[in-house]
Amino acid sequence: MENFTEIVINYWWLGLIVIGLTVLLLAKKINNAFGGAVVEIKAEEAAQLLADKKAVILDIQEKRIFEKEHIPDTVNIPGISFVDGSANIEDASMPVIIIPMKGITPMPVIQYLESVGVPMIYILKGGINEWREAGFPTTASS
Image 1: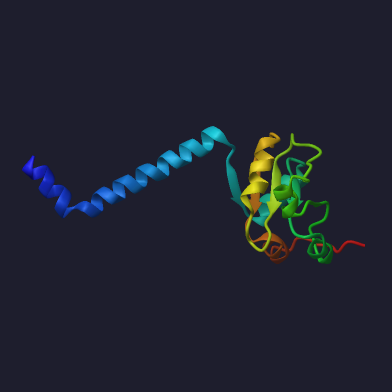
Image 2: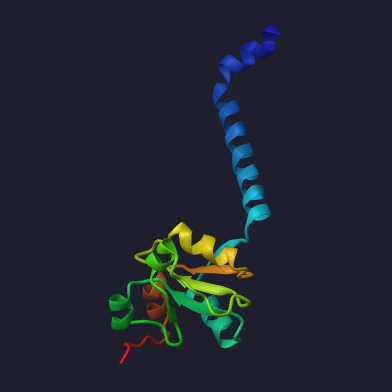
């Protein structure tokens, strides 16, 4: 017993690492059990999913920002709509690629998409900037 106490006192940091890793693993298992996975993807992967018609793209920017520039065929539902309850996805059977607002995807957006049964949620890494930099087209609304 004295040896155990001595180990705990001298190597307390090791215990913290073990506890931290355990918490991370449990959190991941709980997240997968109670909700779908959310995966960050690059512009090339998103473009391929869209070309194969295996996903729809959702821009959660405010309408005025969306109108300045957006990815063609993007659905615009401002992020606030998910907070105030006015968001409505017409077809939840397809995976969704989210273009984040200023690099951030609010949790209510993900929670809503999961609650209506969206099978897979992707987040476009780097948003519209990465899309443009990868050489893919953007457009302004008329």
